[in-house]
Length: 180
Image (tube, rainbow, N blue to C red):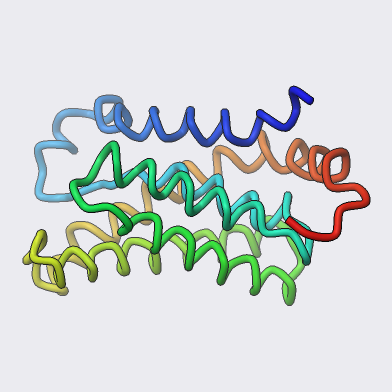
């Protein structure tokens, strides 16, 4: 019974750590023109979609909607931006995973693709709503590229720690289940 709480606890831990992540970076990097946005919850959702969910389970999408809403509540002033972006992109990754095998290269590819799509959709919504007015050229240079690179480092660090654990939890918890 306790094992069912591991996934939300990890997601909640990453949600909290996202808020203090920038404090861990050198001041010279924070004071520069580059904007680094930690998407650690999303990285873990990518791992869930690839290594935990089976073809007919969508736990990663449900967690994406729930924790996207929590990110909206805690870190942004607009509800639904992260919830929509994380939910949609996680659903897309879950669908693409059905075609590709879950290995290191696929994880990096889907992680990079998902990070870029999620951050672009979040920025696009912020532009439409009027919160952001950054030019797309500046956005790609000063926000998207540093964000994807920094989150890629987190994805690579998390890979050896979480993959076997998620596969084992999936086999233990989802044995015999057919739906969510």
